Image (tube, rainbow, N blue to C red; front, side, top):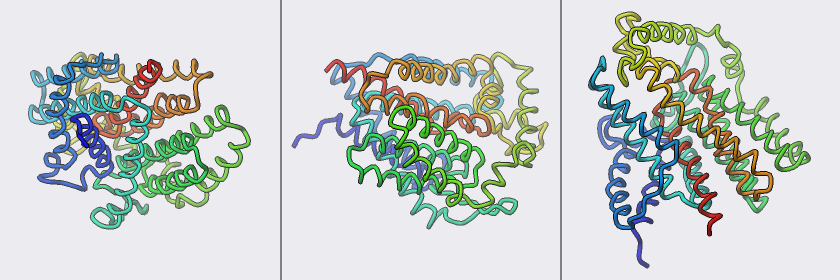
Length: 399
């Protein structure tokens, strides 16, 4: 059987998606420069461009791709005025890699079946990371002001929570796509495992993201499936989430709000960052230069922005802020428009539009508010899948 270049690229892309939940767990060099995920990307890119030249077929970029590309160009320009050239150069490479990653997904996940397969691969990566990562290399508990917290995949606690949140979203998507009850029940069980993982990280932002996901699933059940199924499936899940999954400490952390000590530290970072930004409102201090530009004021070398809106604004100014968030505004607008017009669509199309077109980005909103989240791979994986979903709708209707 002849294996085409396209199939090799899709296989490597699937491996990249599988390793997102364990990005820092499997390394081949120094941390940050030698992860297996990065080497897979470097291996895939020459094949990608070779395949494009061979087929002489270039997909027209979506508006979201265009705005993201303009943002990457603006990030590159920031090397001219940056406060920290090495950090900016690193982020230029990071954003360029993310753009190519999104482009790969859009180009090769061009049917519903391939999109579904990638989501299942991501779920498998989440499970593998959680079970093996937590039990071995990164399994030690973190004591944080009396709260016992766990992570997996070598990821930060907050990053881990949103990786698992995205895994939960993909499992619910598979529940509604399943044609057999057994398959649906298996994915419901997996969603419970991943939800428990989110709770175990003790991340407030992750908890809020999971809550948004739960409300979104409830809305989908009630409006798109049936009210009886809503009561049979969602209510038991909700009761389990409230009384079984989280420990008391999770509810304590979630209810602290603005009184938490970590919130006060983050508020200080936002205030200092914005005061620095006022001197360079249009272009910012340069990509990745938030800490170097504020360290003389905060006297804390590791006090990052902990807010994506503030981080992008301070580092890349008003221009960067507009370009960056235009991508997500366009995605949300397109998703909302698709939902309004999708009443007569098939069940499959409705599921993809709701979960990949809209709900995924609402789920990430708490991360934008409390984390430096702008270059996280799970976020841009979701962006690529959302655009690919819209492309698949157009492509499969033409067949």
